[in-house]
Amino acid sequence: MTMTNKNTTIEKQGILAVENLHVSVAGKEIIKSVSLTFEPGKVYVIMGPNGAGKSTLANALMGNPQYTITSGAITLRGEEITSLPVDMRAKRGLFLSLQYPTEIPGIKMSHFLRTIVNNVRGEGQKLSVLEFQKLLEDKMKQLQIDSSFVKRYLNEGFSGGEKKKSEMLQLMLLQPTFALLDETDSGLDVDGIKIVAEGLNCARRENPEMCIIVITHYIKFLDYLKPDYVYVMQNGKIVISGTASLAQEIEQNGFTKLLEKNKV
Image (cartoon, rainbow, N blue to C red; front, side, top):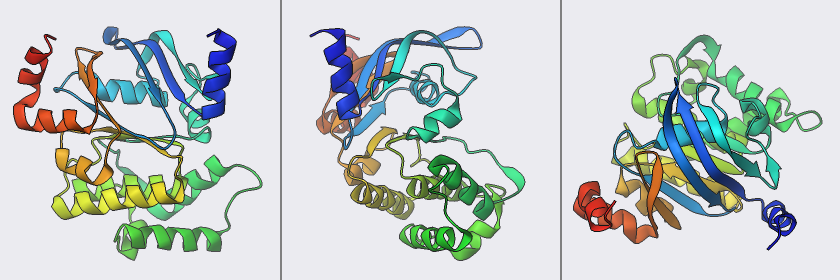
């Protein structure tokens, strides 16, 4: 297949592709030659021991400037986005739910949410105050969030679970094409995990083409999401790939036995 045909296929299908990616943080190489493709409508899971490079990969995909891509490429719908800033990637449909959301005193949640939604929508599609309020109330109801939640300052004084619900509320409002979830389930109890997972599934029903890329250590979260593909990272590389059964094997035997079994 020629490169022209390959790019045409990528553009037609709306694929997010990572090709031979190398990423460094503070001069240290973390991601080492990772190549992956993410298709619309699919759920992907990235697992691995602490320090394997999972969060680094997610941040590099989103364009965090603290993560330097030293070689390789990221393409979206046939367009190379390797050098695009975060806001331009967001406008093209990428979203990252942070592992440790930042607290920003003085910025009300409601104002922040309306600003990011209208910035991503762009001119001609921005929502009025009343239109946004209706949309916000609907999404908060789905996530079982109290109305007082959005009157608070952004993440200030939020519990770990509240911060994760804040991230999910952003996702449901923005309706991205590719949703990167960096341990969104951590800090949540069983009920919280279920609510967040149901919110994700609701977003997928509204947008069946949404691709979800989950970084997690918790198999329970995956029971609700029904992943199509599971990847295991070790030392900055994808070392094992499989289906949902791979996650079950990790839960039963742990990473050490899995890596030994596969001679990694």
